[in-house]
View 1 (tube, rainbow, N blue to C red):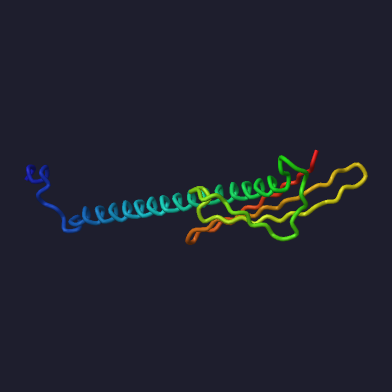
View 2: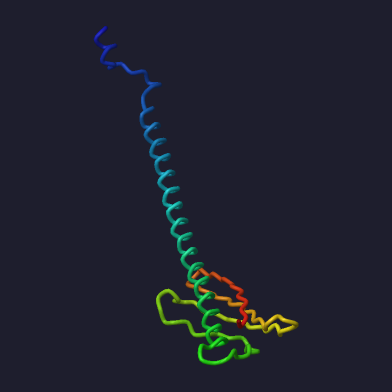
Length: 145
């Protein structure tokens, strides 16, 4: 009888099956952790995509304003006037400008008592791909020295 108690050959009917419940509980907890990690990875990848498109939109707006500034202030001649219409410069066909467009508006603040004519450029770029769309706007003020 002592030998039976040591080896545990006599198990109470109430104790049978508890290992299965613990195993199922552990499997469920591990499954929930795995699902949350997959969700976290997906959200992280989507956040990185938004950051890339935001950077592309910012740099597209910056490039658009610089393109208009080079037309407004040519190297070999005097300053030209601001165009009255919306300017949509063609961005280079580079992977960095993929799916991006830019619009630039130019307003002229006429010179007065010792203040040179100032030009205000507002450049708005939009980059989109599928469900992702980012828009960035840059304002640049320039004057001829």
